[in-house]
Image 1: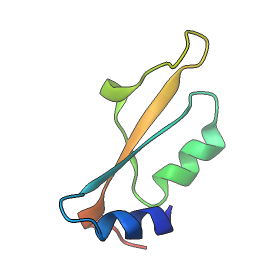
Image 2: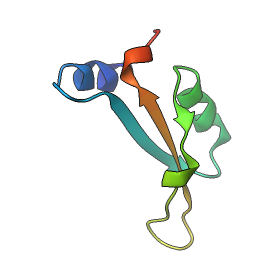
Image 3: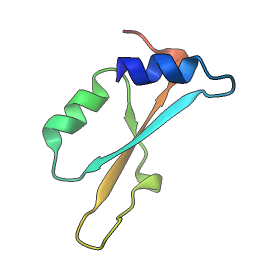
Length: 65
């Protein structure tokens, strides 16, 4: 995640990272929340009806790694 954030910061105009993760992955949710990703339930989606995905966002200006 750190490498992705660093690459995104190098691109002018990019100020947020978004990711999707399976709803049944609490360990992954904790990994995303630790560096500051926050849930964005308004962006949740499903690529197919049986695969619900939760979304998270990280505002790059608040990175504290």
